[in-house]
Length: 164
Image (cartoon, rainbow, N blue to C red; front, side, top):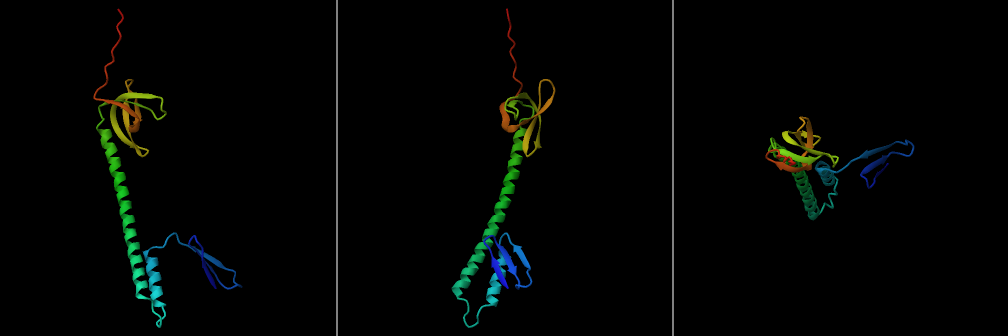
C-alpha cells in the first residue's frame, strides 16, 4: 500500500495492485486539531530507546502556540471587519438623515442627468445609502450620496430676468 500527498494537500491512498481502487481525500488547511493529532501520534509512536529531543518538543509546542494565536488574531480581525462595516453603514445613514429637508443637487448614476430637489428620506438600497429626492414637478427619484454636488438648507431662489 502506498500513500502520497501532493503539493495541493490531496492525499492519495492506493491499495494493493490487484484491487485497483483509489480514494482521494482533500483538506483545504490544517487546523489546530490536526496539529494536536499529529503531535500525539508522534509521541505515541516514538522509539522508547531513542526518545524525541526536548528541544524538538519545545519547538513543536511553540509552533502550536503560534498557530493558536494566529487563529485568535484571525477571529479578531473578522469581528473587527464586521464591526467596521456596520459602523460605516450607520455613519452613511446618519449623514443621509441629516440631509432630510435640505435641498440637494446631484448627478444620476449615468453621469449626465441632473437631479435637484428636497431630500424626503434616506434608504439603504443595493448596499449603499440613497437619498429620496422630491423634484419640483413632484416626482420622487433616488440619488446616491456619492453623486451629490451641492447641499443647501433651502431651495435656491431663482431670479427672473426683467426686460424693460
